[in-house]
Length: 236
Length: 236
Image (cartoon, rainbow over all chains, first blue to last red; front, side, top):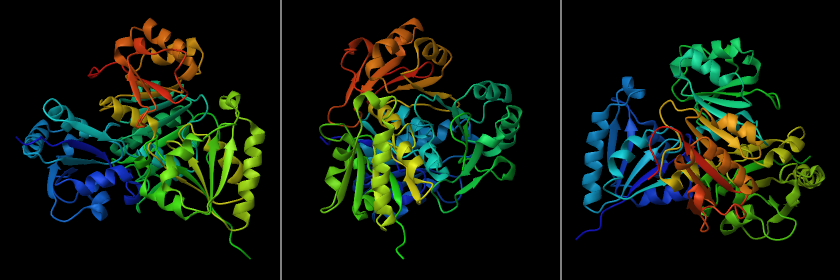
């Protein structure tokens, strides 16, 4: 009888291929099967991060997720991917699911994880999160001493967003994308604009850091973030 | 005239030497001078993480921080270290300051950063944070979908801790150590005990995961964390 394979949730970091860990790299190079999220048409951002590290002959599973499903992921797409992955695991092959940033920090890996973990061993390899990458890009501590740090998804409705931001020490507003105008409005209402910075594609060659006034609200990508420090040092 | 050196704040990850990034590894191996925090007597945890990766002949600067100063770090110790580091930078030597986890996520690197950045170039290399490492160790997503995640330092006073935890989706209570009894009491008062888990030394060989009832409050180390999920999936 063949031993079953392990599903690895591999955090591969925020974008710079050199921000992958040695552990993720070793596993990535050793596994026969690599799975990654991708748009319905075109290239996978996650795959592009690890492209310099992949080896020849690896079987690739592109999990093609419709854009409209970013909020409510297409369950059937994950069902189908899980079946395909389970087939490899049952045959004794290890599978690495590549995750931008960290697998368990708002990652879509959870949709695979919950489908596979009941039947097969799963190991998560933590990665450098965009949260830390944005802070490094800005050149300012994310949180220090006894600051409370709130990580707040931008899709929350405007009133909830305002309530969450009202009494912060420091906050990271994630998944900004098409919610940018709302985020900018809420921060302006709270008088926090000057203490906020917008970062997109941190650590990638396309990285941009802007004040909120500089951002074109129609162009903010899904992988963008606004960091706010209510007290403590100002931005340089 | 010699070009000045760069101070690198190197996130080296939560403890497993393989959780260092390629970028940090390349810089670590290339610099002539390596600085790290250490206790007044004995070995540095940060140095032990990178020990397998260091090269011969590197100059080492141990920044020996009195234990009592964990809350209010000894300013003179950092003043002195900054002077020593500045000497190397002025002579054109790059210096890597090794940071457990990520340099800007509640890291003591900020004390060096603020002393050096006005005079020399500083680059921060983000690292895998204990936040993500603890979540991976527990085998459960830290935060998902539109959850708000609150990172709350355990040294806050009991009333403040309770107010911060009362309406969470998910929280990470950090720097638990000698504050464990207070943290356990607050979570019990809020009826959250069953949804909380304690993790110490995540990804190290000494890693332990416990329910709150199992923890000996006298023995919790500084590098321990309690994760709480108020809604969403229960712990396995």
